[in-house]
Image 1 (cartoon, rainbow, N blue to C red):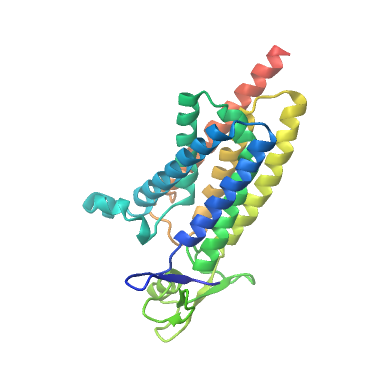
Image 2 (image 1 turned 90 degrees about the horizontal axis):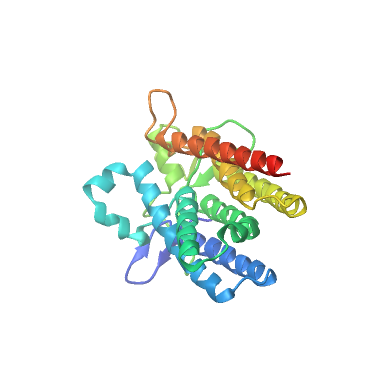
Length: 288
C-alpha cells in the first residue's frame, strides 16, 4: 500500500485519491480512442464524446458519493459537492454518470452509442480495475475486519508527494475505522486485518472484462444486438458489487432488511439488465 498526500507548497491534500482516479480515466480514454480508431469511428466525434463521458463520470461519481455515503453533508452543505479536490468520488456513480452523459451526446450527435460501448467496454473495465488499484494503495473503500490469510493491514500514515516524506499528522481511513471499532490501540501504525475489497473488485472487473471480450465476438458471429454487451457489463457489475457491499466498511443507509439503499439500486439494475437481455434474445429468436 502506498497512500500519498499531494503537497503543493501552499496547500496539502491528504490521502489524495485524485491522482489514481486521473490515471484510470486517462488509461480508459486512450485505450478506447485506439479501439475507436481501429474500428474507423469518427475520432473528432469520439473526442467530444470522451469529454462528455469524463464530465458525466465526475458529476455522477460525486453525486453518488454524497447520496449514498454523505447524505447529511449534501443536505446541510450542498456546495461542498463542487470541492472535488477534497476527494470523494464513487466508481459506481462515475460509471453510471459517464454512461448517461455518453448516451445523451450520442443522441444529439447521431453517434453509434451501443456499438461504441460494446467495443470499448473492456477498456472501461480495465480503467475501473486500475482505479481499484489506486483505492487499495490509498486505503479507500476497504473492507471490514477479517481473519482470512489474505486480509490486509493498511498503514496508518501516508507520504507527501513529491518529497515522499512520512506525514504523521493525519491517519488513514482504514486505521481510523479500526480504531473506532476498538480493533487497534492509539499507538499502532497499522490497521486491523481487513478484507481487501478493492482487490476483490479488481479481480472481478478483470474477469468481467474477459467475458465481455468473449461476448463481443459472439455478438459479431451471431449478429446479435450490441445492447447485450451493455446489459452484461452493467448487470454483472451491479451483481457482484451488490454482494461486495456486505463486507465494505463504509456501507451506510442500511435498511431493516440488512440491505443498503445502494444495494437496492444495484440489485434493481441487475434485474432490469437480465430482463432486457431476455427480451432482446426472444426478439432475435422470433425474427429468425
